Length: 499
Image (cartoon, rainbow, N blue to C red; front, side, top):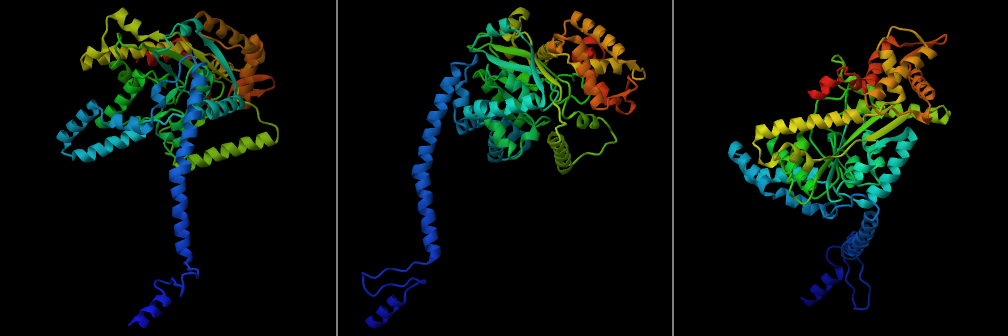
């Protein structure tokens, strides 16, 4: 019996050969060695390398934030320094959110646990993961290079006196018109020396690899057309948390990109969330800063105009990606042949800050104490005033100026001298109306020439024998640029704003 056991032990079990004496080596299968090595490596990473890396990153992040807070007009709030997981849990178990969960369970009969999982999903989708290093180092580099490479970026005007009087503890909200997806980059670049902006971003950016990058820059994702009351409650509580914590935010009251170039009627969901919880006697004021932005060329202009055509087919993501790739290829080809030019001017204009403490005091309002109907009416009036302020802040650039000359009479043929004379009259009229007209090099003649050159290069205006006329096949694009400043003349813009 003993000899049988000895023979079995020497034969081995599971492919492992046991030695006859204690001094002989034990052979181990390759799969076991690989598994053991991987487990050891994972243990070292989890227990030593990753914790040490996190400590180094946190220390570096803390030093970065301390350095930035000495230079920024609005310091980075503690809200942005809180761990994302903690913010998600706080939002998920907020009393108002829990009450909304209970109401949804009673109304639909859905299990409460299932609704709570949805709430946690919504919170994880909305809450950003702000990274100061990514925002002020990587973000600044990318924004500066991109903006300056594509445009001649200019600051139209900034009410420095009004901005300097804003309480550093106030919650600042930049409200602006939405012309292009470049707005995010241009405005962030122009405001980077003042504060870190948190944008409300639509579903278009909720794709990998954009999602983690945009989230690290402090943006929060919004389902623009969601009618789900549970989702809206989670979103409203996040916006109220961020506003109460002093996070500088940027919102587009129009709710999306303008398809025809005009200002669109306001959608005031986010502004409603901010103001409905505002306490004028609280620690922080709520300050809205109107921002106007305009371009000599909008990158997406043709795509936006095509969406207005009822006969155009809905494009798939693959076709949109193909068109974007083709556009990039054409521009790279122009660059290689040294025939590529920047897309004219992009200009940002910061208007006079609007303090909500002063606003509610002058009008005897208390948003938090109003019933739903009265609050909506009051916020509607506020939204109209904000959109009026944004409209007044939109700068007039060379291409929209010259486009207005041709859009008013598309059949007329003009010499260059006549184009300049008409444009000069428009400039005088716009300045009397209080508009900011950007005059490059302080030379009106050059400004009109630059705008005319942009339109002729893009074939919106045709030149023949020294005479210029609007291209009959591209009148919609010409009107699109003229529409960006039409509100100054009361041409449809007034109706849009008051709506």
